[in-house]
Image 1: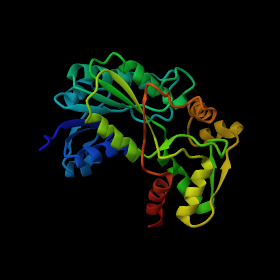
Image 2: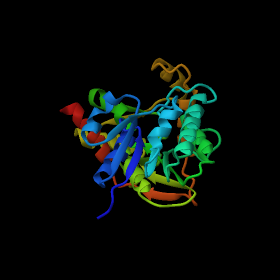
Image 3: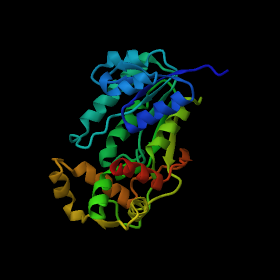
Image 4: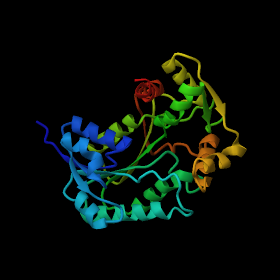
Length: 295
């Protein structure tokens, strides 16, 4: 009988961290969930996860959380309005590195992103490029998981699709397919990576069963809702005012990221990275996003 291991998992209340923990629990392993608020993770405690407090501002607490486990899944929190120069992402990455170096778990899987091999032109993805850079000196084996565009980003399209029959797209042109992946596939691959043995630094790229365009997103909504859903491009010269209207004072990082996807600057590195394909389709994800709204 295979002996259960114990893994530390960050972001357990989010989509990728939650999917990682779920896959590890299904495989019979023990989970140490690193959280900032135990109350938000109560359902995981009920599922048998041991919750420990840890925050990027407290290296000592993070060190204790990472100590004595068989592997650690780490990630940065999403930051849609970073300060110029990305000081927040760097500070959090340095805190993680300090804690991991002190605790010395035998292996680390870090959530990164497609395009993180680029030094410039990444916008919001820059924090993950910084994470990989800061983690380079880690003494233990490290896997950097670089997924494509999250299919679940379509959650922002659910309400307009249902109410107006039209979704807006910043990904352009509308027939351009890019790598997309379901967060459940990302969590599954993160969990599988933690259970593997490797040496040194490795990159794992991940996308869904095929590439999808904004037209494909509209078609998936059409099938899920049983009526035609149209997609309209948001004019590039209106992006800044649009994002500012949503409450983002400096939309430049978001715009730079979108430009990177639209120009193919943000793309997979290729060899020597390991490239994997997930099994969850865009149609499946869209249906999952819509079902709670129609219940």
